[in-house]
Image (cartoon, rainbow, N blue to C red):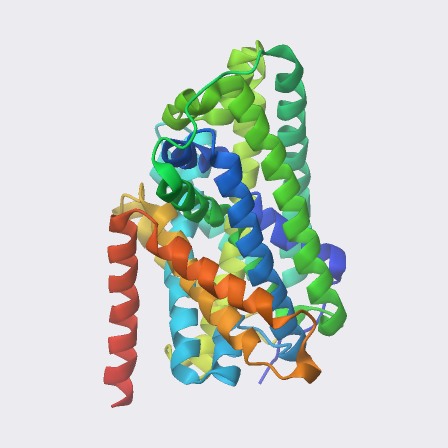
Length: 405
């Protein structure tokens, strides 16, 4: 049987992780976060970033020890047992498949207003095809899209910051709970480094490459999100930011550069495509790993002998995303996705905590802090997101129990 090949270095892996974190979230996630936290959105961002750092160190430590595709689905199985691995894998696949549909629709909303669904379907099909022709092509396209996004974000912040007097607004309009809820929503923006761990089977020298790539991608993302968040709060203020549908475009308009909002559209489209590409890649690898253990249909575990990619899994993920794009309204996808990913990382931290001293790279207290942070942020998300997320996870667990009984 054909196998995955190790072709990705530190730069490629970092680009895939950073491209995932600087996806459509940076163009949309600040508005709902500001509605919950007011001017406290930056505190929420720091909380989310710290929890993400704990999760990133746990992911890097585990991936260096278990250098095969599947991410925490694999780690949970190896360290905690099959049921914990399944819980993590199912939460990742379901939550991130929904996020793929959100990314596709965000791209279409910026690129072709009024034709969102057909254009979103076309984007999913095109990127699924790219993924089917090899991981090096995925990494090359991700780096090109990431360059466009970085140029737009840095340019927008630089143009807006010096031209407007700071705008005042409410601090903590919903108290500490609002700040924690905002942190949970903002965590959606930091979940991209999971894609590096799910690609462990295609990374060269994983024990060295993965920790470097994970921490480099997360550090870059936190710095960029802080810069963008400061600019948005200074120029728009928390009240206007909370009600904005296109915060970065409004940022340029208020700063006196309305003609440059087209750049934000281009950046948002490129960011959405980059995140969608990386998401499809990571979900496909997790699906392949779960299928290999008969937690999903076994045929999805096949690897294409020519291009060394899990083509059947990639096509299945693409088809599921197309169905969601055509049939479902995904306005609540940020909260739902955050819930699933926080469950995924709770299992990651628990797995890392159980590793022996010979496999450890970071202290255990980071695993404890990460686990507690994931649980707290998950439970303080909007109640609808918590209920739907818990229900979907329960359906998956009951399905596995029925199949194996």
